[in-house]
Length: 388
Image (cartoon, rainbow, N blue to C red; front, top):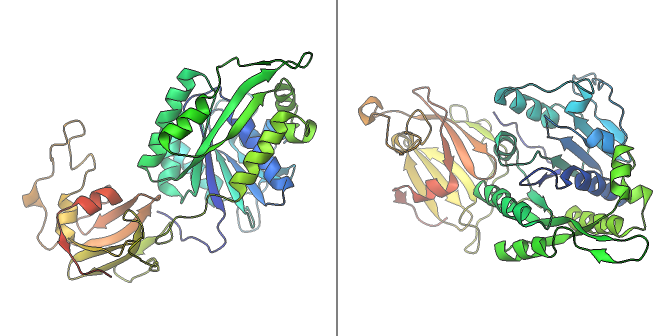
């Protein structure tokens, strides 16, 4: 269940990639250090549970983290950056053999049960792909935005598109694309060789209507610096790659602001009203896909959107509209739930946020596994109310 958001919550920015081997963790480590050098308070969650690498890249010893008096994990710190990683909880050569639920538990612990202090930015270094970890983070935390790292190689760019589309589907703002390994400059003659082609990252950003954050050229020093825990932005500050990292860090340091609408995460218990989110402003030019307020009266949930419209959805209609695997056949979408089994007086008991894109709901019959996307809620046949 989501916890209440604090007023000084940091901007949470996910650094993702469609495939492995594109240098995403190297990019994350150097951007974090560049942000810290610029005066920001920065934390990094090494969310690649199975293949953690951030501690080594920042020169952090593999020692067990200490606990604070209030039983929170104290993160390691190096180069002005606070870090938590699975590498700190396991031996150097011990594999993390974990099923999905345990991975989710560790991820939530890394964010919620770590004594981060006052942060400006929390970077999440994601594993490659569009699986469990990415979905867990998008559902459990109010991500301010995501960055996709790719090489100029065609196959990498095609897979990067999937990562971008995944973030769009869960309403995580895509802050931009980084093209890594973008050309190699010969240290002897200065000739630039585009090993993985060129311009692909910029083209995909343009095609998908997102920002192109910059190109990071190949630099042989990157490998040595990463292996020895010396970020390139410190070890070779005058290199073209270091300059690219600083420029990207400066752009991201001022971006990732929260979208309009009610603050997330929230968990509202209808019986006593606890956890109900405070209403947000509405306007004719507001987003039609962001919630501004929630109310409940006369057996119906009232959703008010940022564009000023409002919808009234009966509790029973919401229960019948559930799309979870218990209520719908996964492949065909055929209804498994027998409408006659749903009481006429069924009622909502709890409502909570699922990331930036959906609501979770619990009903008086005990059912609580459905996820209702904002898009689906707007599309439901309902009674339209007067504009707010």
